[in-house]
Length: 133
Image (tube, rainbow, N blue to C red):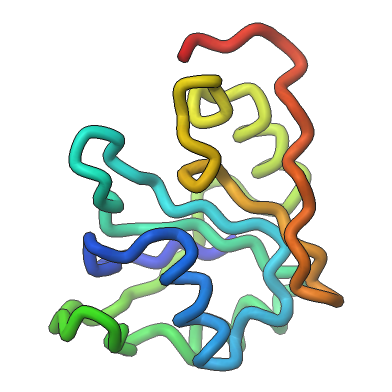
């Protein structure tokens, strides 16, 4: 799992996923999360991306490290590092019962699960316990 820092704050999850697709580096993503500030509707400047293999993660890091995202003419230079939580299962379990899955969180601000073979999004299963909104 890779953490990407220095994401321009005006990027939404969809815009950032599209930017990664346009760079040709979204093919091995199975989980994506861009934390958002619910009050300002801007992102917090970083995201988490789980990739299906170490090779795919290395390819992603090589493509993203030092890149500048094009949409908002930001001069922020992207920096990647290993995330604290590693692997699809661990990230899935970390997010499933977290506050970001609560009823008060807009669906577009929640983590995204993708089928890496098709790029299709897979609905995130509901939490297994009651969450605070």
